[in-house]
Image 1 (cartoon, chains in turn blue, brown):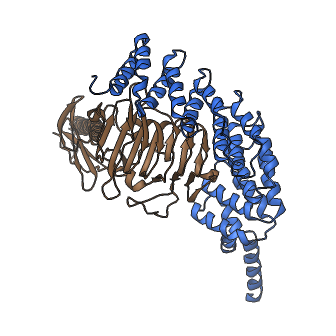
Image 2: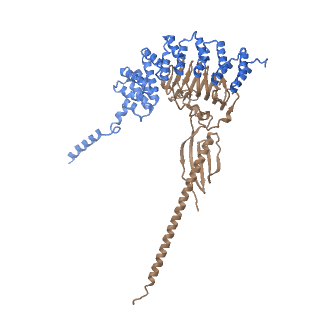
Length: 296
Length: 335
């Protein structure tokens, strides 16, 4: 009897073990597999990051497709996605580059993830990515964030693109303000603003330009344009009611940084025509602070 | 001998039946009376519980307004509530009483980080970095050492973040870099709303009014300064050995107050309508919240470092409940 029972029992145990749910008989082996841990939503972020770091030396063929699922999922923590991107960026596997490029081209992928892909591709091959970066930076159909990122990476290239490239993006009014500001930052970094005084003053004084852009130009211009020219531009802004109150006060604040006695008569003239109570107060304060002590 | 006097037995049986019925109905009446009394008591207990909760809420609001004193018995909706706060254990004990029935609830509170801080530098509008500024969202302690915690974003913006010059941005466990790793930057966050300084700090409306001043503050400062003027230009926050600490708010009625050319050491949180140039030797440990930042930095080697340790010890009382206990143990009496 016992001779029959033992083999049958062993057989049944074998069947049960082979059909056991994941996490029972195979728990140890799966937990040791970094790819499984990296994909496991229930594992802690720290454990998943450690697992991803372990995969940097792995040659698992399934790794790229499995990891791309992590970066495509906007619900995954950004730290985790950044680590996966770093892994793909360092990987010599051609599938990694292809996966990143696919993600960058896919407009259904959230912009945040596309920027991560663009960054990884640029870090992987800065020179090879230049044509793509130039296209993205100029593409009016692209999101402003992608274009800003592309310009940000392009400005680090010391080969200096033709000033026309940067100037076109900076001056075109149909470009979003952040794109124009990033182009301006690039131009400053590449030293492309020499002899561009008029261009900057025109933007500063133009009430039809976005206040944010004008303010940014004012701040960057202080190291490019002479103080006298800038102060004239500020007076022009303050004196014209077609400029927003925000912009006029910003110009006044800048005038107040270095009170200039020579501007006193013009400030008084502007004050005599001003009707806005807030600006009148600001003008009175500036006039008072600019007036020499003996005169007051 | 047979007796014929058995008719009286019917009467005896009848009397017995009446007695039994009386006893039974008396018992039923007694039980139902007791039941109704219990129902009533249960109702009183519920009322007392709600009153205790009211006391708890009231005390929490008071703690948020820096009022740590006890609430003595206060009439409310036909009952009373009272509450005490033990600052050392951070425990609120609230008692509600209704028709002589009392219930006690206890709740533990903790100081929380200002809800408006999403990164080392947070803004509702676009952010632009130039110069040599280092913005690091990795967690730092109050002495400016990295804690090892990934922290948060270096820059969190309701719009777009642009980077230029040699500015470095780090965060989420990633060291500052130029160009920044995109994982250190948060863009187009629709919940980065520019509301009120109180909401950004997570304290009750109007609780900061007492700190409002139109006089330009002197530095180094400590505690809370709420400047309502138009601009603070070139403030020197202090040295690393004698820094400014606490909360600096620069916010005027038209929401365009300017903080410009800030430098020196500040430990705490700075809230300003427009931040232009954090530069020179600036070292801000904690966080900066701006409606917008036209240009975050100019020249110099400015540093903005996120610190959960500094932010959780701000002089505001941004408390929230972490655990709650219905003690269920208060004896009640009824007659």
